[in-house]
Length: 427
Image (tube, rainbow, N blue to C red; front, top):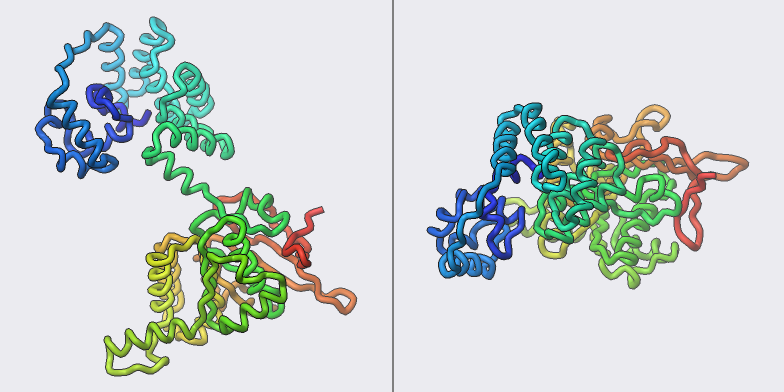
């Protein structure tokens, strides 16, 4: 139970078809009581977030045609609990907890009091006590979505992600509109790489909507590695993915990947686009917007953003590879790299998809991840593919240099590429 949830009048929750999330939306829309909601039309009610036309009609029908209930008799417990909740909302959690405990001493199974007690513990960062109390609530009544959300929050704070996600999923089965559970599950969604051994190292894969650089010297199979991930996401999970090449033509890229056993026919939701596609789109736009229509006048960073937004809206997309940053730098001059790259990366992030950026290594000894030295700070993750020569042979190694929201080793592991795909050796 959240603070906002505590403020929702019980009479709204008693409406047929109502749940805590919908009642909260009605309350936040300005309808704080049955009487105020009774004055609203069906159209007014249907405009409230989470309330569809059918439910709005049912609510209207109930409020205007159902026999009026005799107001429930408030017990002494209810009065005490209400005073405790008022103190809690005023920030006087110690006094509130004392009153709530007094109520529970008389009625140990009062759900509202237990939920309020658990929320106070959660707010005061007493996570184990909060978890113990939520365990008691969900044992007494396993059908309350908000209790499972509270339990999930306590588990997250205790770094028990797997159990927490199970609680949020349970909450959504009880209340599919629960925004907190939706948000928490969205934050924790991960895209598997299908690189043998890597997903386990990354707690299940790449966090959704991250921007990740795939870096390496020439010949380190960066493009093949990135293409492999998109191909498998499409083939195994049916996810829509886009490979945007600023260097290699679409035909050449597909031919090369086919030699690696990655046939386009098996990944129907993978779209491969190259610079020629973008030129056609941007040349048409330039003719409308300016008197010039030469390739040199294309604003490539903006063009990439617009192209990806268009794909997202018309095609749908979970992940995209941009191959490569080096090619973008050769096409576009960044006069103020630190500022311009910051806004470019933020606009990529705003699209709301997982982005993989392929990048060469720079600097003396090729140890710098990005030409301008700021890229590594702007991205959420860096996967480094490096080659080491041994006995006249170049061996591949993979290291996860950085991955936000993930506990991972920072060692380098041998990277194997064979007929089964990519895999790392951790033993």
